[in-house]
Length: 246
Image (cartoon, rainbow, N blue to C red):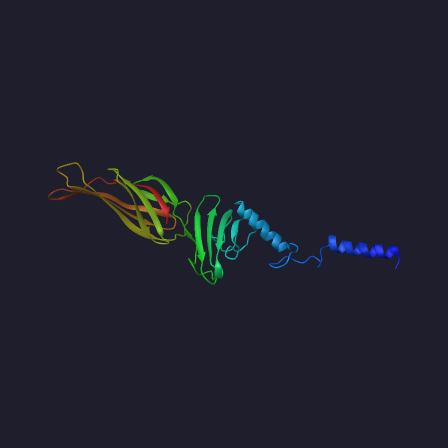
């Protein structure tokens, strides 16, 4: 074989070994040194990003119930907490454990609403919490003693019901939880002991009902308790100051 043929042969070998990769580059494993595969490189970069607290952007349709542990940013993820119409960026913090258990925290970037979900042993989507749960978030703010109060956003898919924040004319403040996933009704009752020797007690009562879109104040009355009788007081002594989805 001539010198030229040998040089061409060596050139092909070098190009194959250095330029093209090939089987000569054995992948590293737990026992032997070797080269980094694309999968190992992706995992390593993901680990570095997670260590820095960086979010990995993933494409729409990515299933958050199958992602490995890490921090992700996805719009339109499969199994997201918003539903099929999900469009905003959502940040996901995923922790995994043995036997396919996982904990997921999701924060909607546009409004900061926070959701949680767990998957229990075996990895079945209906295990653990079986659905997304959320921290209470405001759906109405203001001051109202009568009328219909429209939620924002609406309509809502409520997890448990609503939490009504209120204040009375005599500066008693509190909250009242009213249960119902789509509709519900309840009463806010507050007693006051006035600084009046002729009046033993005042009872404020507000009756409300709600749908997925709004809350309606149906009644807002006061009953005055005297030593020997009851009488109607001034209406509108309870004021709603806020409503939360719970």
